[in-house]
Length: 161
Image 1 (cartoon, helix red, strand yellow):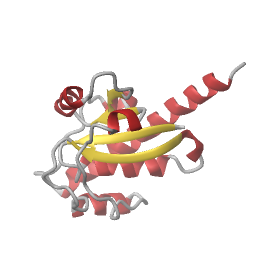
Image 2 (cartoon, one colour):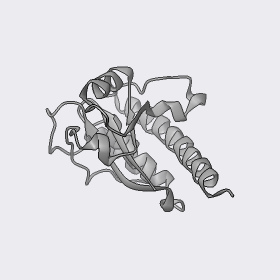
Image 3 (tube, rainbow, N blue to C red):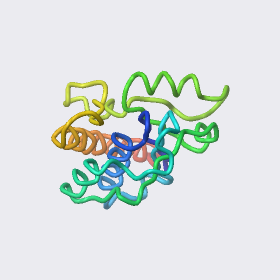
Image 4 (tube, rainbow, N blue to C red):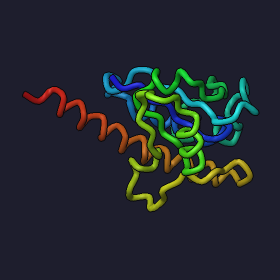
């Protein structure tokens, strides 16, 4: 099973939606992923719940992120997780700088798993509208489905004789 961490800057908008969307996409395929979490590259929002607009967007799509609490990325995350997925290039660059030498986690952009969206980076909805949170949720759901497919393919390759 793969341990996955979703990362944005503050861990109150994009990464909680990404974590929730992935958990939602895993229904019926829970054996694909083990530890799942989200975090931010900064500690400013540590301990806070996801943005209320993101919570509403998640509920409207059938999943709940209200119990999540923001936290900052820790050095141990780079060995505790197999895959750390950044929401944008700036977060990815920050993660690369934060990664202890020799850590094992693979660092990638989350939207790598949603090539049909036509975006490389997940837009930050924080200063936007309710609709921006719905867009991020929908993009997260598409990327989550692509990630599940990717994990299924990896699992099949590991199990193949």
